[in-house]
Amino acid sequence: MAELVGLAEGIAALVHDGDTVSLEGFTHLIPVAAGHEIIRQRRRDLTLARMTPDIVYDQMIGAGCARRLIFAWGGNPGVGSLHRLRDAVENDWPAPLEIEEHSHAGMANRYTAGASGLPFAVLRGYTGTDLVRHTSSLATVTCPFTGEVLTAVPALNPDVAVIHAQRADRKGNVQLWGLAGVQKEAVLAAKRCLVTVEEIVEELDARPNAVVLPSWVITAVAVVPGGAKPSYAQGYYDRDNLYYRRWDAISRDRDTFTGWLADELGS
Amino acid sequence: MDDKVLTADEVVGELSDGMTIGIGGWGSRRKPMALVRAILRSDLKDLTLVSYGGPDVGLLMAAGRVKRVVCGFVSLDSIPLEPHFRRGRQEGTIELTELDEGMLYWGLLAAAHRLPFLPIRAGLRSDVMRVNPELRTVRSPYPDDEEFVAMPALKLDAALIHLNRADARGNGQYLGPDPYFDDLFCLAAEKRYLSCERLVPTEELTGPPQSLLVNRMMVDAVVHTPNGAHFTSCVPDYGRDEDFQREYTQTPWPEFHAKYLAGSEADYQAAIA
Image (tube, rainbow over all chains, first blue to last red; front, side, top):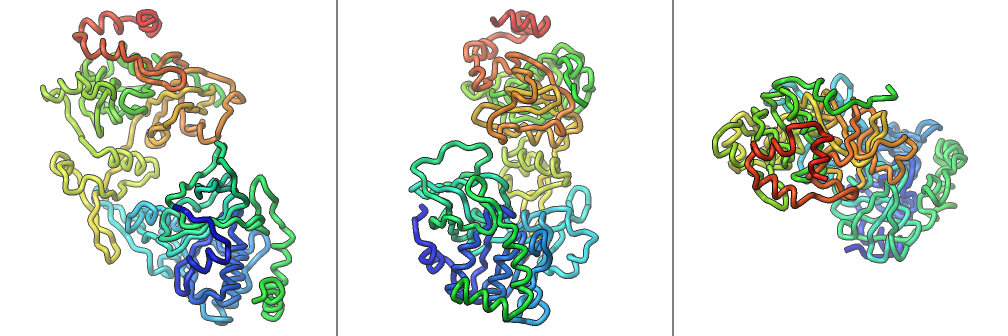
């Protein structure tokens, strides 16, 4: 059953140095505040996994939290490159960063296999791309009926999944709606999970297209209003597009970035 | 195409002998019975049925239209054993591909994903492997080396499903507690036929988006069949007709057929009213 915790308490209890950590959210409901708390608590040697690493992973990588990144698409959506990610891969600053690159379908299948308790998933992706050469975790399976060679991807079972949702009730049942990514799959695949929410409500009303994660699959819930900013939380606040544009200038330069870290996160 | 509305008999006219036909619903719940009754009025034969089976399978078997059944079970829910399926199995009149329910799901999912198979644990170390010698296993390509059943894609020539509401374009909505696997039946099939309790304008398909189980890309034709799931349930429009289901199981087939199924759908609905 989920426990109601403070954000700092939740991160301290659930995210450890060396863990494989998935902060999931797809444009919408990105758990930015939780990522910032991981920076503040100076976690190190994390393997960060995410379908679409954007600026919160750029910040965590620039702050030196990560040793490795498992991802599909990486970038500042609608703006350009992630400069801290580039600097880490190209120049080992502030630390070397290994990368393991997949397709979106591959990452979704990896989480789904992990959530299903299967060691691998089968799909037709990757064939004909250079990912086959660069991503050593890919394998093949031959169909015993047709002889067709299909791609296999290994299950992804993070030590911790961190997501942001609109609401939870006092028992720790979590409801999120609007554009959903692979939050459900990441939570079900993970050994532990922390969900930050906009608010706690007495009762979760039935909502169209709402994903309800029951309390028994959730380790901890922390109330963090605005916890997805500068991304958005449908029904609560809009995306701060200006922030994403500003991040490009902040992140291009190491000194500007370290100044931002000190000013914004005291880190 | 804006108007995909056909009659049940027109749908059956698009089917042919020997086809593999998937039928949605579950046991004696939300079965496209009006479409099944239309098949009974036709000459279709040698069908392979893929179904979470109920009286759809029983009726077609009783009428001698079935060559093979691919199923996890055939049951009437409140009456555990489907009598015509039971008799057909005891007398060996049909071929059977007997699967675990999860395997049936995985086979439809593989077909829906256009994959030749999907790996699954269900079926291993059970008689499912003995009674289906055509099944194969695959091994995980990773160090765990675990063995899985390779569930082959269950590709369907046609799918028949019944939903509470639909529009003329083939968008369909269920209003009960369970979607069953009707969306997968459509995604696994070449031709997809949706019957509905009420045909409504698109703008009346309100409610939770996830209740819109099938969309017009997944449906080739729509049939308006009020009370079309009878005698199976179609919650919340109506529950199962338990008295009629009992009569179905207790009445010799020729007598039952003559009383209810010899005429049109309108005759059937008049006879049960």
